[in-house]
Every structure is written in structure tokens, then in C-alpha cells.
Length: 48
Image (cartoon, one colour):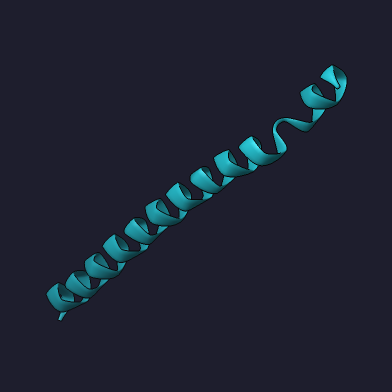
């Protein structure tokens, strides 16, 4: 019983971690594309 519980939890744990890493990667790439399109607001306003 305990072994089955640990197996299910392990699979869920791995799935959650991989999903978290995937979402983090997406967020980082999104942030970069936003920075490219908008650039850094504070610095750009001063230059312009």
C-alpha cells in the first residue's frame, strides 16, 4: 500500500516539477521578447 502511494506521489512530483520548469522557461522567453519589444522603460525614456 505504502509503495503504491509513494509511486503515485513520485510520478505526480515529477510531473509537477517538469511542468514548473516548462512554465518557467516559457515565462523567461516571454519576458525576453517583451523586453525586446518594449525595451527597459526607465532607461529608454531617459535616452529619448
